[in-house]
Image (tube, rainbow, N blue to C red; front, side, top):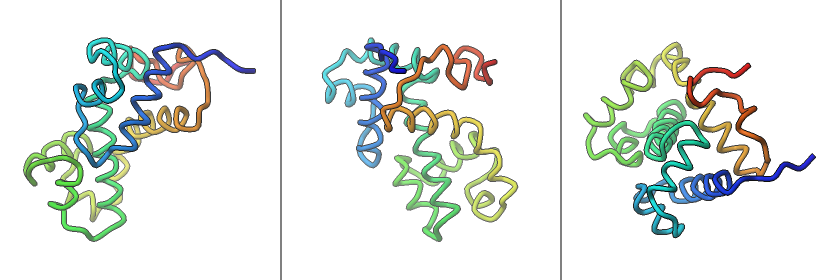
Length: 154
């Protein structure tokens, strides 16, 4: 059964596609709005309404999740991973990473228990991205997460 996709959901799909295809470049609301020819204010509101998080938070979470994966799977120096994730310094990356995962990047790399903290928002962000990337249509009123409360919907 096909469901119609709303204009806001279509815009959100385009934003996610742009972010995922330009994840190593400069990503900001201004840049994305200019590239996709949308008003940055409308685009920001539509994305937040559809996804339950802001564009900036989505980008940050996506980059931190990619960095976490690199920490787990590679032996690359943390500073290189930090720079690839868009952070200007090791300190800024460590602070953002620690706030998100409740441990330092060094501990995350060594400790599998620390890695369990990554699951909640990463699943939310990637699940919705996956659905959009695969062009699945679904209504957000029945989405996995209640956007206002940030917890599982009934």
